[in-house]
Length: 117
Image (cartoon, rainbow, N blue to C red; front, side, top):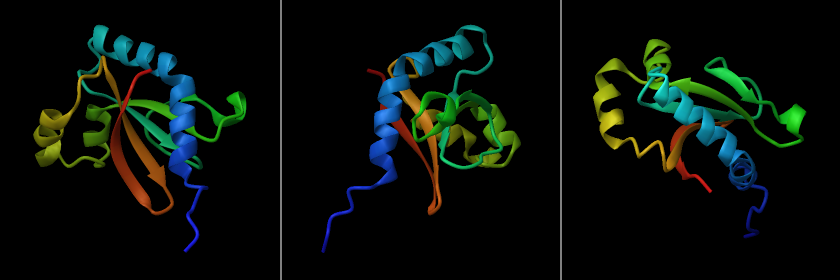
C-alpha cells in the first residue's frame, strides 16, 4: 500500500509554522484585551462561517485560511455544546505556549493544540 504523502495536515503544519508569530500575537491580544481566555483559530481550505479572517491563503500563497475566534463564539454557534464547554476549558492548553486550532477538512473537523515556534 502506497503511503499518502499529500495529507492536508502536512501543509497545515507548514502554514502554522509560517504564521506562528502572527497567531501568537493575536492570541495574546485576545487574552490581554479580555475578549476571551480561550482563543481558537480555525484552519480551513474552502469556506468557514466562524471567526474573523486573519490570514488568507490567496494573499500569502499558502494552502490554509486562518480565522480567529473564541470559545464563546463556538458555543454561541453550537460547534461546542454548552454542556461540554467546561470540559473543553479544563482540557485547553496554555494559550501562551500553544495555539488551539479547529481544523476543518472534507472528512470532518477536530481541535488540535499546536506549539508556537
